[in-house]
Length: 190
Image 1 (cartoon, rainbow, N blue to C red):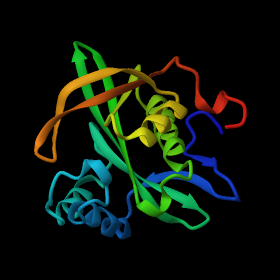
Image 2: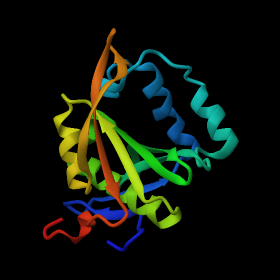
Image 3: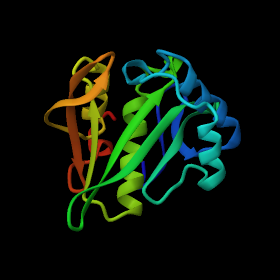
Image 4: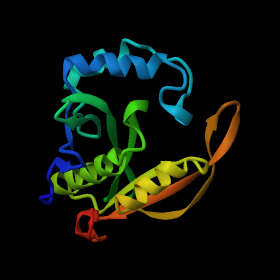
């Protein structure tokens, strides 16, 4: 894996790759807006299914402060899910990226998620001066916690009552990866 690259070998001649959103991917985006449970714990109710196409028409989901990339598994070349990034700021010039991921159920549990998130970090560190990338997850989402850790993130702590989900305010876990943290690609066997 080259630093700043956008693909990494998986297993059985499969490769995880990130690429810009293309018009055929909008069907997957519409599904995320309208199929309860498809995105797991992050389902927050029905959303405007036409909104992803409107955003695509504006900037192809490649905005200055936020965006989406498609997680693709080669050689199948189909979209396995999406990764997202959004700019944030703590104070003054201290900016960071908040990232997220959603994979279609058929692609979960295969090591694709941690690789896609590590690739996204490489991409953001390569193309922006941000020192920090952070990601939140649910305390009950153990698979995503492991994925973030494999992608080089460290648990920072609990963010109390940060999300309204399923009729109640719930806590979340906050993870971060700094520019100088060891790359997951430098670990043996990865």
